[in-house]
Image (cartoon, rainbow, N blue to C red; front, top):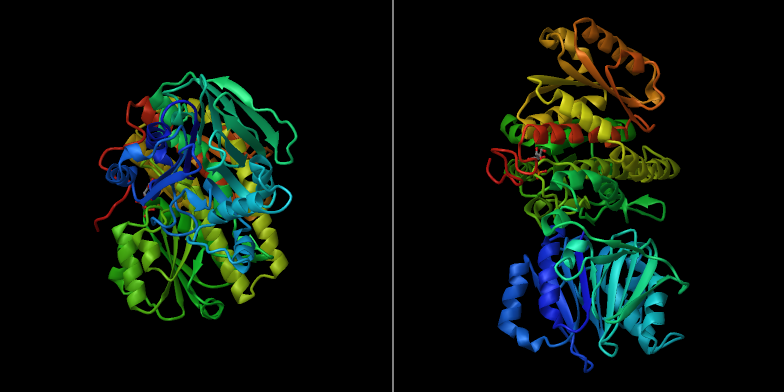
Length: 618
Ligand code: F6R
């Protein structure tokens, strides 16, 4: 989830581009960079690892005046392929070409080989750089030689995956060419000037007239106008609109809180986490320094994590044991190393962390490594400490999460954990290749279903407003519904400062049922219809038990679940999925509920009291 900006107009490009990058920094801050075309056949590039402040210092040192020109592009990076570094920062350059990219070019490996075989020297570890070299070559030679726009299209037609790209060429300083497939790009239309941004916050200071670009479109922009086509060059439409947000609202995408924006971004977080991980019928991890043989030799899996990440691990346990037939234990990281767990060379420890900096998880990783276990990190932050100290990494691609309470990173963690489970099953041969492929296809369907849940949260918010004064709320579930209950309770505790507990529904009668009193709200997640049978009927009994004691039941269940509907005081329908994948849907109403209760109580949803986004102390 990088931030992309572009400018063609009559103003000096550098200040416009740098200001736009400041607005885009929430999308990533692993590195940033600019390219300014001087109009006389040269492009001046500066890029730096780390926050924008580092780039600004480099620009000051170089002399900002030396970046003369009225056309420029910029990028702020959330690293995916290649760790954060100056070398991997955008723009990427090849001859007169400079490009910035957001997304993942899934077929970058064969393209890279092709370029290397042709003698091209690639200087970064990114997937993005191939686009710069392909364009430079298309401009030099072949059917589109010398034609900037046609060459850009020729390159775009060779790329697979999800991407927003902006291309510049020093010999065509009055033109920028940009394209989008799946990842966002908006055009800003000014007076004799045009802007590009990953979202409108990039140019809201300059113009309120914007054009949303459709899927698989190319925009050719000059100071005095723009033209939109599809990848084949056929005319295509954009959607013009007027921006009526102020700057703060624009940065939050029009939502009141970043958390709400992040809830809405979950379909993309899951889709992006899956991107590039299934090649030639096989699951592939990002950085695999564990051999296939070592994966085959694994005889036990430990998952270590904290908070929501721990809950994502609890969900994964069901899939990992089911798919790999390996015992899988899930441990709170701060407990793990103090109880002398049994670890050896054939233990795989999966460390899950959004930030990659959580001290408890990091120490658990160090302990596991000291005992010779193999460590695989599932992490959202490229270049952070936990992946650096691990033997293998699978990155979640949720993009920066600003709200302290985890939402999109949590769903991305569940997704990535499933990929780990499938990678293990594949290496160990406990699933046939076609079964692995079929599980992956199921995962690929999830973003669309998640979108349906995200689009239908208004009734959940209404329930939240109604229950905002409750003293206590319980959450129940069975199987993967149990960690989902824990996550629902955690969200409510941390955001609304309300007493909340999650229980396995069957455990209720062993004690917690004493908590049930008249009017107590109790959330229940019902297993999908696929799981109707024992699990479903047991939960129906549990609901009857609590209803008989006066609880108000709020039931999350499949749309067609008519058995449970009559037992629900409030019924929250979700789409049909498999049992294992249901947490990717059922968690979302809990996130929305907690955020709405917090807002109704007047709390800052993005910054709950006493909490920090990254917990770097034990
Ligand atoms: C809850 C939440 C925390 C984190 C936990 C681990 O909404 O965000 O419980 O999940 O502090 O953080 P990471 O994943 O950065 O290790």
